Amino acid sequence: MKRGLSDICYGFFSTLANPTRLAILETLRPHPMNVTNIAEALNQEQSMVSHNLRTLEKCNLVSGERRGKEKIYSINPETVEGIFKVVENHAAKHCPSQGACSESK
Amino acid sequence: MKRGLSDICYGFFSTLANPTRLAILETLRPHPMNVTNIAEALNQEQSMVSHNLRTLEKCNLVSGERRGKEKIYSINPETVEGIFKVVENHAAKHCPSQGACSESK
DNA sequence: TCTTCATATGAAGAAATCTTCAGATGTGAG
DNA sequence: CTCACATCTGAAGATTTCTTCATATGAAGA
Image (cartoon, rainbow over all chains, first blue to last red; front, side, top):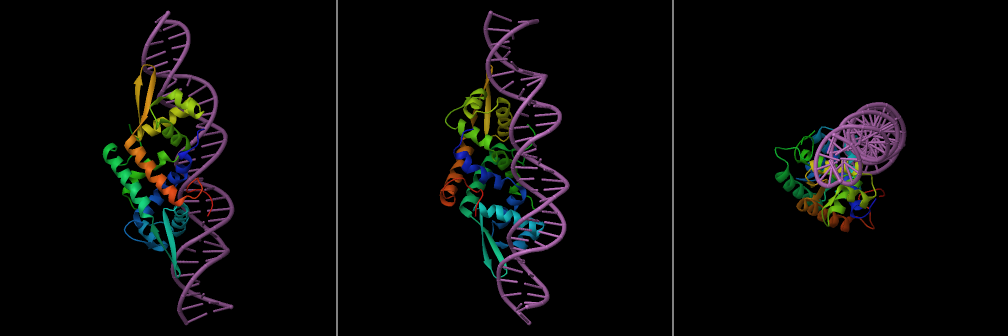
């Protein structure tokens, strides 16, 4: 198996290949938020959100800052916006109605 | 669960979250190639490459063109280069030695 | 048509990832 | 210190995705 850029990318894309994590990024896009609020916004269990925030943080897609009892998470805007931009453009051109790269064809 | 850009992105990133598929993209980056040659380049079974090419094609990350017995696959350069560029930049800033977004921390 | 090369496909066990639950840790107030 | 609130963590069953194998389909030439 060839090895190169692929390796650098694998963890990155694996991190993004999850609906909860994508939803977290989208939720944090407008502004930073604490864990409880993210969980409420997504209607998910707090522990699930926490697990996924850890994955996102490992990958530097979000970063968290303690503020008293809370921990405020915010996205890494450069990377997240950059990626979303490419995907939005791709979807606009190649993904008819909606729901890209899925079933059908 | 919130629904939005996340849905469009999910299939896209799932497609990219696989070492074989990333290696295929990297292999095709310089120039188009047929299935057998890709398999040889990656030292992988032909059927595996074929399965993964199908996934990539569904997502419009590659496209295949029959030429006689062979089928020549090529990447969608706009999207693939765009994505790699963002990831390379991200890795340069946030992924110390190499192997991004993986273990440690 | 028969043969050969090239590619695609279905199915099933193997492997990786998720989700959930129970409880641990951290923080600040009283 | 104890309590309450906020977040984190480990483990295990549930679920999803991979890999492999056997075989099917397609294309071209004899």
